[in-house]
Image (cartoon, rainbow, N blue to C red; front, side, top):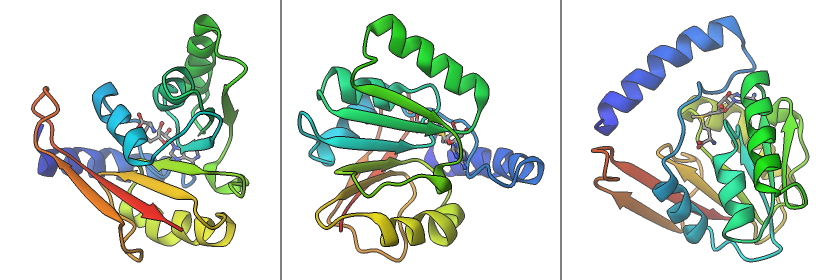
Length: 178
Ligand SMILES: C[S@@+](CC[C@H](N)C(=O)[O-])C[C@H]1O[C@@H](n2cnc3c(N)ncnc32)[C@H](O)[C@@H]1O
């Protein structure tokens, strides 16, 4: 799916989802595995570092961060089914020591210990809610990698365009450093 179609699809679902639940900052739309690896590499994730995925879906970013990058990985997910699904996947892989999921609102957490934050949320939510929160909480040197949607009030350190992920979908990754 090309980016325009992706944004249109997400926008339609998002409007409906946000009307039903104002806490919902984006619908579930998972990041492909190949792109997750690029996000974590771009974010320079190192063993033992603390990372958070804001709106962790089925936990795939947290799982890869813990399994392949040996990070201390925490996801935050509002949806109870996705929360349960991610816990189950973590348990099956035996990653309970380093992969954790918080069931709750990503806007109500403390990210002051984060070395890396990953985000795949809508620009409106980023501008009005997520960026002000991270401005207040992130320590100096913390990195943020955003998938497809930039933090429009921040200047990126790096922007990576991926023309085709193998499924015909294009992606843009934005790296920021506090
Ligand atoms: C576009 S999906 C991204 C999922 C995952 N990060 C990935 O890249 O595969 C956005 C996720 O954020 C979750 N979400 C939306 N608003 C949230 C909130 N206020 N607190 C926690 N999770 C939220 C949704 O349920 C959904 O799973």
